[in-house]
Image (cartoon, rainbow, N blue to C red):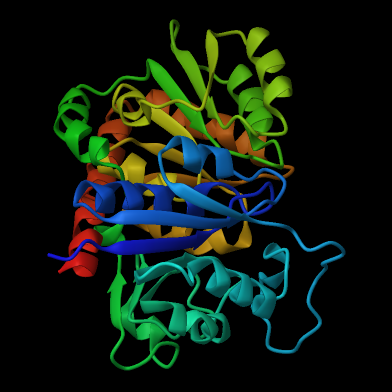
Length: 366
């Protein structure tokens, strides 16, 4: 089979977060395992992860943020157009120029600020375009569209993609690293005897609003079992990292802050409860059956949060005046019903089996 040349157009930033970039890296790793050559194009926003991409061994082209770029005034722009750091036409021209020297089989774009106009503009620089989306709120011109969210139906993209587009929807296509599927059996087995010894806090790689501190404040006053410990995962560019570290020192229970952890699947498998954001890590937690108290931190996370709550896999919260009281009450109920953890784990495991990356890879390479 001809060696596949694949390019990714994806950004990370303090505003965007890291989830889009991390799921693209997961797919790129899987494609590289099958001999594909993957390259990345990413804009140098504040909080970008361009050096991380390069450390993972992928050639990466950095686009500059256009000086003075603000919220676009053009009618019909995507709701997240301001995330781009340039006009869509400038971004398309820059992308097309960078790809001009390569014979690109697939251009994979994961960006809420880009739509069908951009995809048509770059079409002559590649054989096919794949779009990764979560919103179903704008038109796309692509050969494959992936939306890995729970409850999504192909009909949600009717009229938004060409009739011949292959639409991959649902958590069965969630882009997870292979270690989550590998840890699944062990993780589920140890949950048959429910306990609350280890709590894992994962509010995203950036956590620009410092939700982690709000969670730690609530945990400090919770009636947790003696010996219970707390592990906090954060990214190296998180703006509140030092504040969280300082708070961890004065927590009444042992609290450890891990930065850029590389063994997340193992940490999730060894944890008994997660407190996490309703982002792409939702599917990682489900793959290992990890019960979760889920915080909705952005408007576009509400649909995912509600869908997971309805399965019984999570209890859902929003930050606000009543968050701490509601959270402490939920922990108290959990302590009074030890089997609740087991039921949450079973519900979570039914959502996602962790094999989605292989399914997406096959859809591209086959």
